[in-house]
Image (tube, rainbow, N blue to C red; front, side, top):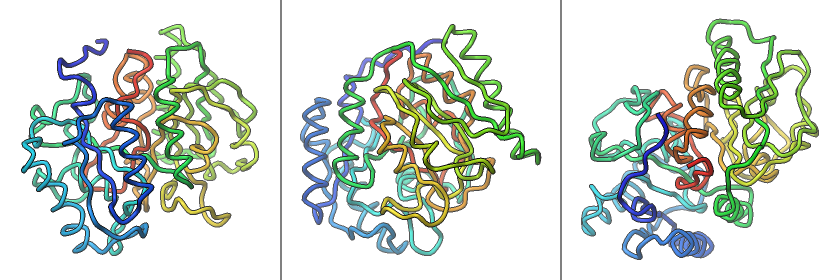
Length: 330
């Protein structure tokens, strides 16, 4: 079933959250509101630390309580579907390593850590009311504010194109939970080929690079035994391209580093428009299902809807980066 847009104007579906303590955060948030016709009352400015991690208690008072109060006072609680966090807010809680985004997503819902996402595998436009007060949360992030702003620029330019979808299977990962990640890529290839879209499904041990004009990308990143950073950075992306990597801590930081696993910040720098990552170990079954992700996106669902429909859990480690309204195949 192809996407049927809701009647609510897209910009009115979004509340934008920025940090008063970081002027560039507010500046980018206001730019987003102008470009996406988001009403002024949908801009929420919180006052919190600019560090990447925040103690759980401070998260509750400095972020969640302020966002919830603004939505309630402005009578937006049941009127928005997406929350967009702008660079400058923490990405994770300090003690448990939960994603701030995932916590905000279910702040109006009683759930425990690693709860099942009720929107997982659905095939319908998202509505917060329909899903009991849940929100879909995205973020504009990157190494720099220029990188974060480029995500919006690319989303605004995104159009349906004859771009390539690269699905880089790693035959080395054969344990059941890892094998399912590979199988989801193979299923995605079949779905995309049936839609007459261009697909490169690589089942070899080679790590794929030097591919041009991508609209979709999924690999094992630095978990692939043949991974080379220079190969990963050699791929180029079209406006609207989305990506996922099977990497446990791919969103652990947006500070440049050569230590540890590969980072989604490098994919953002390379030109993707949307990407999913993890602020700490999520376990392999929490990863995006490639078949759901690319099927929904190419059916016309928004970037936020596509990633979160492909995501099994709430109150967990997940972060989706990119403009929630981006939908080049609509």
